[in-house]
Length: 87
Image (cartoon, rainbow, N blue to C red; front, side):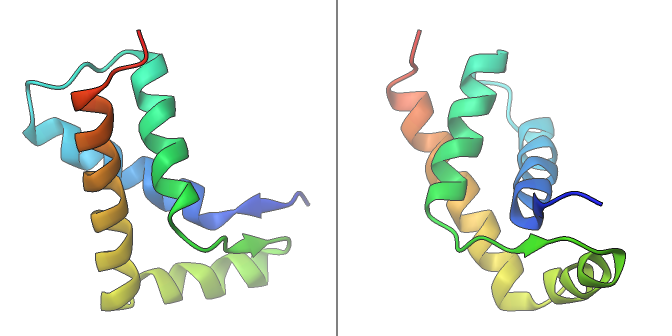
């Protein structure tokens, strides 16, 4: 078992999904990490340790508000990094 922030998984999935639809953003590793960090800093952590906890978080991630919050945080972070890339 290990300690993970389940929101990190969801943010990375959402970022991959959104970047498929956009061609103008830089997709280098540095920009991807910057977007991920900015988005996660604007979301509450969802730490899980056990498989049971992870399953609960997966069910909770289907909550409409949680999904909206993650999408909003990722889109905002993408815009910030697009305006001021760190390279």
